[in-house]
Image 1 (tube, rainbow, N blue to C red):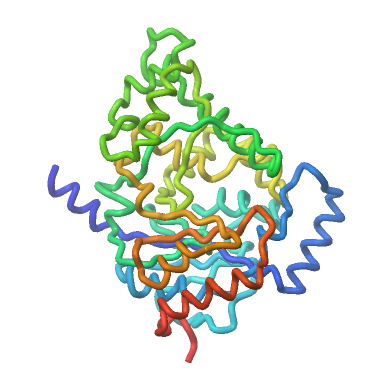
Image 2: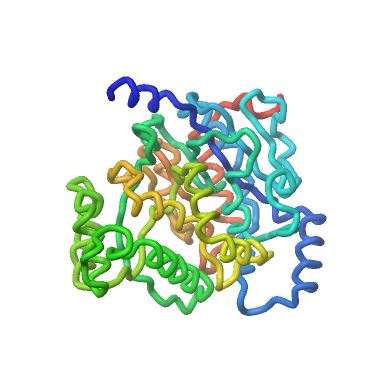
Length: 360
């Protein structure tokens, strides 16, 4: 058994990162044509925060080179444009355009869900991979075991009610859709305890995997959330750490087999749509299946919603006081140019040396 676990620990791990240059006029033209052709309106999420470029991707590569030298390959997913400074000949870099892995019937797409639900189709991708958004930066040393142990993703199973958010109605629907899909497949009577009462689905699943919900290392807040969820007969929602996602290709394949019609419908939406389900379903599926190692993954990535005052974020970038920072583009009004200048100045101070992923 020990030899088998050691072999799993040595299995290669790839990184996947998605990127878009919202300033590219050709991309903008195709996006506008698609909007007009689809006649889309209030059911989509087309905010500019989804696409604008912070011009700091080079610091993501500097962090990976310095703090995750063990990564086998970086799959750089792009609409077609690339940063001018990117060294496309780097042996660890694989440039992946949308048409290289997304079925033609779903193109063109400006929907991150369409891209994310097809990542397993990337040619040459390893079974175990970590998916990054381009706002998730490595600031300190990370090990493969921060993401995978014994061939299983390292993650945290935490429940949290879906909250109606009038400022972002589309995402509220998506979170609810995720919960409905997972409840469909992970109800106690069908999947775990045949004799259980159907009204106790949530509680039955907790009894089946108590360590997954009540791990002593979980943050107190989410430990308490899980305790309180025992009062509800059904799942009310899931909390997923907004950070790098440890994912398995085989989980994707399982979901595409289980829900082909739903996923085809999601992928047919060229923009984020209120009827979508997101890639967070994949992480939760892994957890509810028991295919994960429970750990407080909340501490690994510190989430920052960019605002007018970003002192904690700037200090963390300069001093490397945490392992990963998610620099999320704000959902509320900010002075974008001011915030961009401050954050990029902090990155320049924290990562002054070029990486081999940058051209001379």
